[in-house]
Image (cartoon, helix red, strand yellow):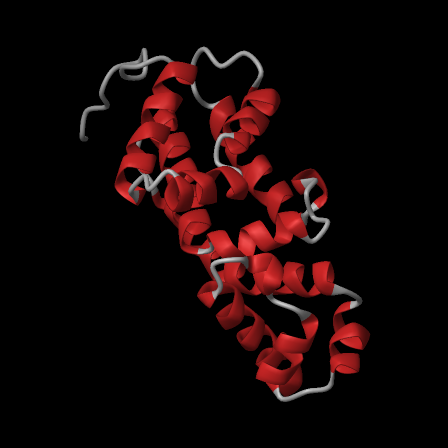
Length: 191
């Protein structure tokens, strides 16, 4: 267990510090964690398995916080969709090297990753509550595609877009998809 945590922490630190996530090797991670390379392969299978484990460890507390916020929110369904996508985007901005490494390590089909399934299902359920959304399953996939890690990294690192500008652009895109404005039911009165 201690080795596993050391490996996850070492990998997380190396990916966060690297401007080229594909250059972080299993040898680098093993050396930083103080374990043999064989330990990595026995415990995680391959580089993709290790990256998936790091993502899961980073995402678990974040998912709990998002879920609690969604359950406690007294906001409109449309606002919950915006909040959920903004939270996912913030996670990808903060972890863009790790998420890009996942895509480059053969995890390029996010639809099979456990974390993608959670995001999609949570977003789909929120979209079902938004009046006028005709295809919540497809819409959830399409909105999540707009914040793929490779796109986030490209916009921030290559195009030098600020995180705030990217978040604002996402909010505008959601308005385009869902229609700008408020819920047809109007504002809710406090009782």
